[in-house]
Length: 387
Ligand SMILES: *Cc1c(COP(=O)(O)O)cnc(C)c1O
Image (cartoon, rainbow, N blue to C red; front, side, top):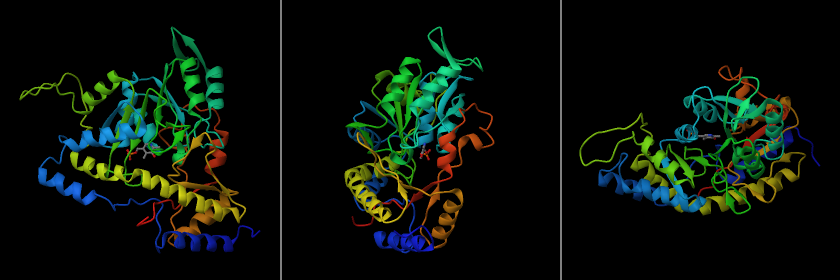
C-alpha cells in the first residue's frame, strides 16, 4: 500500500480531475440544469420578484413535504432562520445556548443576535456533531434544575436552548441529544443547514427538535442564491415565525399596522423561483452525491487515509466529503499542494471557542473538537455536470 507522500497528493489531484472532467475543481458549486431559467423568467415577467408571490409558498410546501415537517417558513438566509428559531424558543438577553465549537460562524452569530450567550460542548469523533455524552457530562457538572429550568451553577443564567449541528451532512446522535434536552427542559433547535437529505432511520434531520433550520446558500445542496428555512411541527411557532419575518404586519387591505418589532427576513419570490427548480432535482442530486462519495471512499481505500462515513441508522447526504489526515503538518501540506493545483480542499472552520468574540464563552475542554480540527479536510463534493 503506498504511503501518504507526494505520490498520493498527485494521485488525488488526478482522480479529482477525472471524477469531474474539469480542470479547476471547486468544493461545492451549484448546478442549474433544470427549470431554473424558465421559472426565473416567469417570475420576472410576473413582476412579483420581491417578498410577495406564489413561488415562496410553493417552495415552502416542497421543503415541508421533502423533510416531513408540518410547516416550513422561508427566510432570506440560514442565519436569519436560526435567529428567529432561537428567538421563538424564548431566548432572552443573557440566556445561555449550548452549541458545538466546531460549527460555521452563523450558528454563534444567530445566538448573539437573539441576545444569547454560546456555551460550547465537544463533538463526537465519529459523527463530527455534538456529542450527547459531552452534553450530559457538561450539564451534570455545571447545571441544576431551578423552578423547572436548567440553570448554569457558575453563571446563574438560564440554559434556554441547545443547538447541535449536523456537520458536513453527517447526522449527529440527535435522538440521544433530544432525550437529554427533554430531561433538562432545554429547547432543542437543529442547525440542519448542511444536512438537507440526511436522515436518522427514515426521519429527516431538522425534524427532531422543536425547530430546525436549513440554508440555501450557493454552496449548499440546493440553492436559492441566498436563502433559508425554518421547519417545525408546532403550528403556533410557524405562525409566529411567518409573522415576525414579514415585519410583523397585521393583515389589512391598505393600512400599515405592525404589532411588534419585526424583521425583513422573508425570502423574495425570485429566490424562491430558483428554489422551486432546484428542489425538483433534489433526489437526483442526493443520488449523485452518494455515488461520488462511494467513488471517493473506494479511492481512499487504496491509501492509508480515513474517509468519514455515516453508519446506519444515520444516512448522510455527503454534502462535503471529509477525510482525516494524520497530523496538522500533513493536513497543511495537503491543503497547500491541492489548492495550488486547482483542486479545492478546505480545513474545518476555526473553532468558535478560538475566535475573538467567543473565546471567553464557557466550554468543556473540547478535546475531540481540537484533535479533529487539526486533521479534517473537505474535498470536492459537487454534483457532476450532466449527471
Ligand atoms: C450555511 C450554514 C448556515 C447558514 O448560512 P447562511 O449563509 O446564512 O445561509 C448556518 N449554519 C451552518 C452550520 C451552515 O453551514
